[in-house]
Image 1: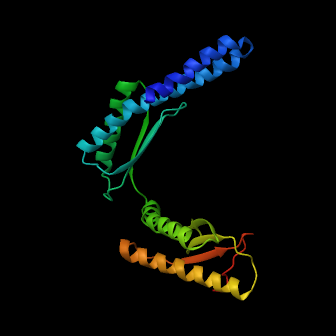
Image 2: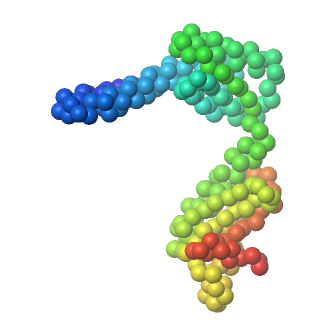
Length: 218
């Protein structure tokens, strides 16, 4: 299926050139872009299984990987997700093995980086299921809900709930703000316990339709 998707734009460009002689220059550029993208995809398709095989042989099973063959500085970044520390000599050896093997098959001289997750990445990843849960449950429970955001910097963690509420002190508005605050707190605490996530200080910020903070007094 992928091959069909790559070939079709090329065929369409040839037809356009015949029907519209005055647009041949534009269409030629489109054809070149399509060809370049096809070539880059082929490089990635060749490199990926090579990298996975080497990592598996080295006992590095869980990882996140970025392969960027574009430009003058193509690179491969591999992030270990197994929580194990890297020994510098072994790490250098694996990087060189990947670089040399991929180069022999693609003729692309990638800069290869193999690293462990940073503490910040580990923290961010551990909280993602909590953020996802809050987002999903808010959509189910509150028609006023319109979006979600978060920020770990500055501390404490800011969990931002965007709503269609107005910024006023009416009883109904204050009750809804309090209801949302309690609901989000309950979901966060429940998921922290379920997932055994390291608890860190956090603050829930509820914003109005105009992006004013509605619960600054809580």
